[in-house]
Image (tube, rainbow, N blue to C red):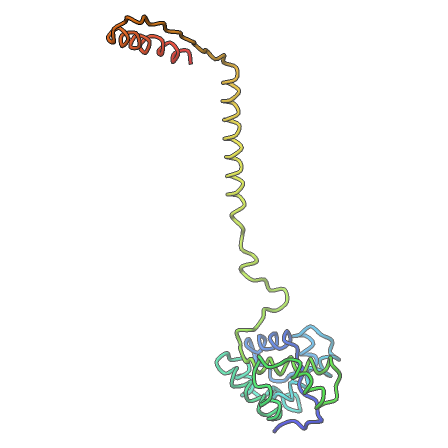
Length: 229
């Protein structure tokens, strides 16, 4: 049965919603009390009794005596039935005018908040909290479940292995630089030998004589210069 337009609507923060669902996955309690909610969600017992317990009654998880409605609880915790459970809550809690105007999670957030504010008379903060839970039900996606506080992801704990490789490459580069510097220093300590040769060839020399001159230079002078280096 839909809520009267002047009444309030359930408000359960996302973190509390997913943490409570995770608890129900492990074990469905027989009764949900303010003390149970206080222990599970790490909040004060007073806040649990005045905020969370009434919302759990509205969405059919518990009855007026705090007894868990087992059929609803099983759908709530089961990934395969979770969307069906959310659809049931939307149908029985929220009036058609809201569901028709804002049917899914991509609906205008400001418009949804305005509807809750106008329908219940709550302020902006209260309307935003009602909107957040309404859109959470519209999304109906168990994959959006976030890990509880203190839970780390695998990617954040994965060791970083590229840094040692970068260091090794850096060390190799420094070694190469030192070796090249040593070679340059050694070359700097060896004197260079430069030979300047002037060849005067008689104008009446035959082509065979000229060839013999250059062959002799290639054989003797070039070898000397090469040995000197």
